[in-house]
Image (cartoon, rainbow, N blue to C red):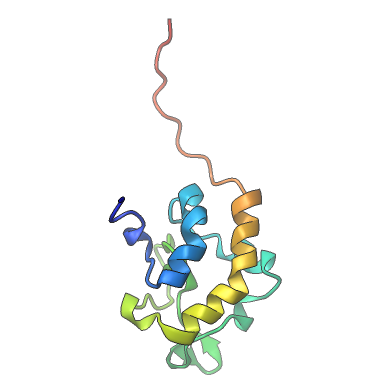
Length: 122
Ligand SMILES: [Zn+2]
């Protein structure tokens, strides 16, 4: 059992954890939300949302945070607590995003990591 793995990536809901499992194995938490949404054939404004995070018809919830790890230091959207991600919202989100998540996992390469120190061979 690899307990703890993924917890820091905001796997708030078992459905989301399942959907994002392979994705996070590859991308290590960073969420390419635009790519995922595009690959899912939808738009950010059409994603399932939680009403209490709607302001004047605009979503204020950070989906990156829900799906994994929001890497935007100046993110102005709301990072909710895990126990607020539940019920219909998580299920609907998974239905909409699963094809996009799979597509990005299969076709997109993660950003290159900083080069590791070269080891002398020979
Ligand atoms: Zn965020």
